[in-house]
Structure formats: C-alpha cells, structure tokens
Length: 101
Image (tube, rainbow, N blue to C red; front, top):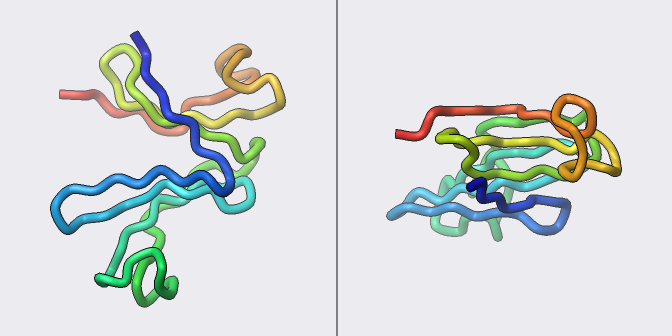
C-alpha cells in the first residue's frame, strides 16, 4: 500500500534526526530540500542559518507528494489540476525514486 504526504506552498514537510533538520518547501512551483546550518534554523536567514540542498520540478502546479510506493521512496509532482487523481506521466510525474532497504 502506498503512503504519501502532500507538500504545497505554505505547508512544508520537516524531517529531523538528532541535530540534522531538513524540510521540503515549495516556493513558487519549485520544491526545495533545505537544511539548517545553525541552531537558529529556518527562523533565521537563508544562506546563514539555513540553505537549499536541492531543487526539484518547477514546471507543474507547485503541488508535490513524498512517500513510499512499491518498495521505493518516491517524490512526485502534479503537472495539472487533475494531478495525483490522474495518470502518471500525463497528470503527474515521478521526479525522484530510490529503492528502500
């Protein structure tokens, strides 16, 4: 069974382990993976207290989801208003897929 969390503008997804803190954050139509660089973290200044590690997508609607599907970690992007209710590679696309161990 697939399990997902949707990520949209104003609704970031935070991930943490010990002192490592990351977040997936949508800005415009691009999904960014950000990491804290200081104890001030995401409430501080970009480039000083936190920075972007990766950027994904940007050609879709600004709606993304992250989750597990078929033994893989998947990061998907909605391409139109039908989005994740529609057909893969037509209404949404996988932008990252990694085998879970």
